[in-house]
Length: 186
Image: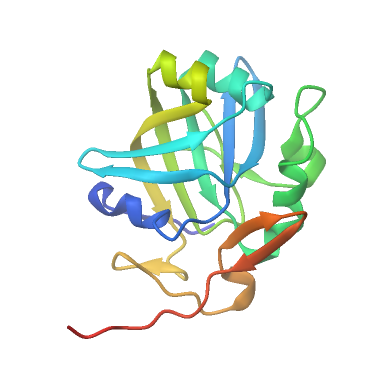
């Protein structure tokens, strides 16, 4: 797996188009991965993100214990695993293994980087107990960001193959993929 560092002030661009993400977490020798459709960038410097993690999930348990997680941008080729990651629990076993997802170590957090994605944000939770408890909303600072250089370079997405495009969850097992980029001249 080839990774290219993304300058942290540009890390928000890995999520700016609103993809479905895989959220990975780890604590005390256990790890998990789930899908989330509700995530977004919040700030540039330091870069921050928000993601909704339901209180009933094993991922939430691991994030609350560790204070960190990874947001990964899956591709069309991972759509089946992404749907399954969002439809099953990791409480009874390792979902990475169950879904056949390879994982690589992150550089700043214990949560793994799911292989096959095109972008990864390593995140540390910014404690906001009220919004976490009331809205299931987690805020985090991005402490490292990575991208597959075949899909993201010079601060921009450039999907060359359909299987490499990021996916967006609609509902009922339906997704769409990111379309073609185009320029608008001012």
